[in-house]
Every structure is written in C-alpha cells, then in structure tokens.
Length: 331
Image 1 (tube, rainbow, N blue to C red):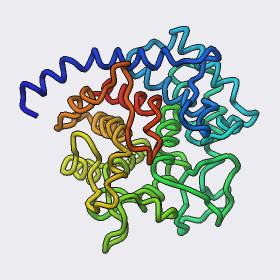
Image 2: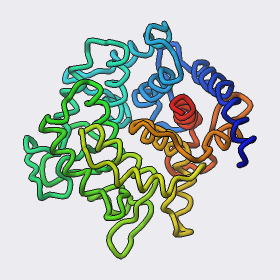
Image 3: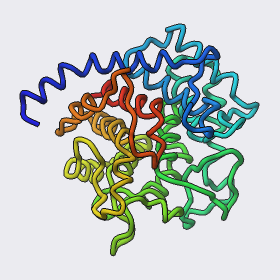
Image 4: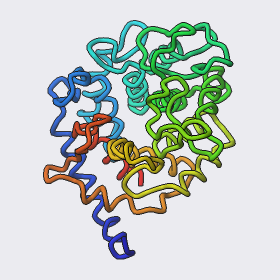
C-alpha cells in the first residue's frame, strides 16, 4: 500500500472502530452477556462476554457505562464459589476466568482476587505435583479442575498468555512463584530463531508444523510468547520482538510456509491483528506494516467482521469483531 492509501486508512479507522463497537453493543443480550449464535460451545456467553467487554473498554467505553456494568454483573453471576468462570455450560474456564478477571480489574469489581486465586490453582505447578523437567510445567490448560501430574490435558501458549496477562493486571508480581514457573513453560516454547510455537504437549496443534529443529515459529504464537515474557517481567523479550519485526505481515501471521497449513494462517487473521498490535504496543513500538487497510476493507456493511475460514472459530462475527475492534483501538 502506498503512503497516500496508508494515511487514508489511518483517517478512516476511527469510523470503522465506531461501527464495529456499535455492532457489538447491538448484540448484547438482555441478561448483559454476549452469546454465540454460531457455536454451541460458546453459547453460555462466559468467554465471549469477557472478550467483548475488554474489547469495548479498549475502544473507549467507560468502565462506568451502564452496559459495561451490566456485562460485568453477568460475569459475576457466573463466578463459582471457588472463583472460576466458565464452569457451567460448555466453555473454556481458564480463558473465561482470565478475560473476566481483566474486566473485573478494569471495572473495579471486588471479586477480582477470587478469580486470580482460582487461576493459580489451575497451573501445572508444584502444588499439583508438577516438576520443572516435565514438558507441561508452568502452563495453563482449558481448566475446570486442577490437572495433577502427569496428566496435563491440553495446554498451549495462547491460554497461558491470557492467564498471565490477567494475573499481571490483577497485581501478581513477576517474582511470584506462579510467574516464575510459567516462565519455564514459555521458555520451552521459544525457538532458537526467537519465535514461538504453540505447545510442548499438544504437538499436533503446532499449526506451522515441524522443522528439522522441532516446531516452526509463527506469528500468533510469537506475539503471545512476547506478551507472556513481559507479563512475567522478562528482560529477554528482544528476540521475540526481532522475530515479529522481521516477519510481520499486514493481513496474516507469518510462518506457514507449507501450503497445506495456509488455512491456519487465514483462520488466525483477526487473532493475529489484535495480538500483534498488543505485542508491539507493550514494548512501546508500532507495527511498521499497514494492518489497518486490510481491516477496513474486510469490515461488513453492518459494522462486523467475519472470517470465511472457520478453523479457529473466527467465522463467529462476535469473535472476529471483538479482535478487530481491539486491534484498531490499540493501534
């Protein structure tokens, strides 16, 4: 894109952001939550509501907006006695709780410490029988009940990033044992080239596939890994940032050289838009590529975004729009 088109995209972004936020507001249910009409797994609204609330706050919505307060109350009604969210109905408890925790911290809700305490119980930690030499040590998985060693279930850098960011925002120090333990897992997911792969345990879920050295680095996981390192107070995020700078693309995450895996890049389009902007912003930098232009071009007439590739659920417009709004807000 030439400079004139780039500047035009920058000027048009606020309008696209307003239309995207308006789309999300119009889909808020009377109960205060957002409920997927695409996936039964997300119909309870417990993960989606936290995702969308944080996106709307990113876009400029006041924490005191009655609609935000209504959404926070929706989440509060779903907090278990132990402090977990997403435990009723089909959902992703660690994601749901981490996203709700961020919303609670930002809205000043008093239940935030309970959510943080619950997330700590879900880590692959010494308290749950895990040792540093085990591949899952320090990570978070889907959550629900604590995973006792050696049965980790699914773990990955994305869930771990969301939990670490939420804990950091809730005031958990980088010196806390949970953060130090998490660094063990995060470091295991970093390749020699500075990029990151998805999981040390769910090897088939490493979407860029295998290389001669192990698993390929790709854009979303590297943004996630950098954000993990920063949440844990790492001083060595430079290699991840260098990888992102060298491989950042305007529309899709890099790292999917195999044609058979290019669908994954397309499926992660909006997650990457958000995660990459967040990663660069977290280190005080801006993306050098024009990611705004492609986002503006993909916005639909009703203000939403929707991925045509369903591999990672971005064909749900609530998910794609929340990521796009957050990306445009953070830029």
